[in-house]
Image 1 (tube, rainbow, N blue to C red):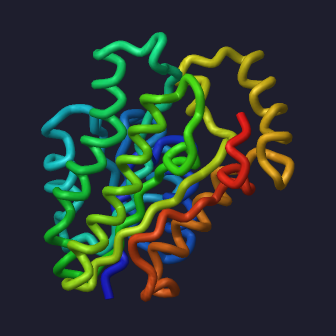
Image 2 (image 1 turned 45 degrees about the horizontal axis):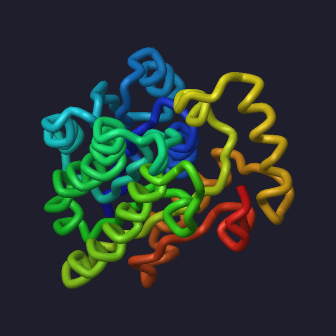
Length: 247
């Protein structure tokens, strides 16, 4: 059976940890992201059979990624970990900011899953989309991000119904705060981020932020045959954060 999986956002954070874990567990990983050097490092370390440099914010990128990823045989799995974060609410968000967040977090999710859909049907494959605990619970001054992730969550549920007649499973993971570069890329400086991680010990009932490898374990579990009767699930992988909505 094919175990060929496309991993987006594979050059850092959760996507990178997932690519590494999947390769170690015998999957054929096709890794995509924007950082060419990081992609080359993954391949040289044996964590990707092939790599594709692309920016999923571009409308034509998903189809181009699929065309290259599917060479040599159809995909049996998709892990979509690419995404962005940023603050913004009713008082300070702009149309441009809202549109950008939706394009990267929602439209790209739709495009890449749509591009891979026929392969997943052919192989009775599995897709896992990386969402966020904020898709499940509201947060002040994060309106745009929360809405984007709530949309991803509902995309998971709807696509799971569409895929079920073909044996395609679609699930999502909803991480809490995970120690990656995501928040710093979203605008936090070093000191603010350090304070944010310290605060995360209080906002997560298990008393700490998560690590990318912990999310990768949940993704691999949902992707694998071990969960062959699970579909349409948005799995909180968040140290209990969504139980409290603390921020």
